[in-house]
Image 1 (cartoon, rainbow, N blue to C red):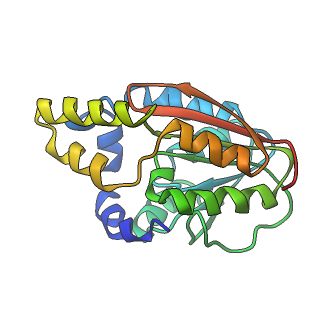
Image 2 (cartoon, helix red, strand yellow):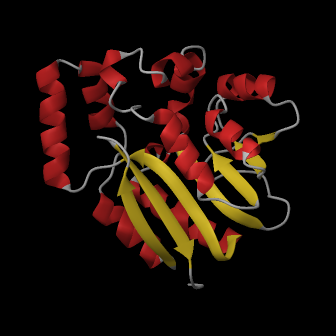
Length: 215
């Protein structure tokens, strides 16, 4: 359920914002247009929003500035402490994509950036099924995360990263649960969502899924 990565994120909490700012050359392309990616996700939402994988609160800030009611869910204590220091009044909960406290009232949108890849494809399936039950009709899932167009794209990206000597990034791409657009398309549609995909940088795709029916 992604909790195997908690210790990593506890350690990363102190330097995460430096990484996303592009100061780490290996990950510069991953976080290219970072602010635009966050703003795009926030702009696709309305009303009450649940954010999974809050991290240090960068997307949270965009959502709050846009006037959304936000419930943040984050499994890393280190990350929660960072976010809580920024937003004292934020409803911030200890949980992950699959296990979290009961949410108060109806939810209009579920969002996440740079986090859904912490679930295996089977866990992604379970998560999307769960969100289809939480969201009302026309509710949205809006995620931005690294994904591959297909397996050939995955292999080529691994080759290019290795060629550049970005061995930390290569290890991440090979060991975390990055999936392909066709797999994601099947999972969202399986659980009653109409979904569209837009590539926002070399690595990151916007996934906008609208609930259209009950399964």
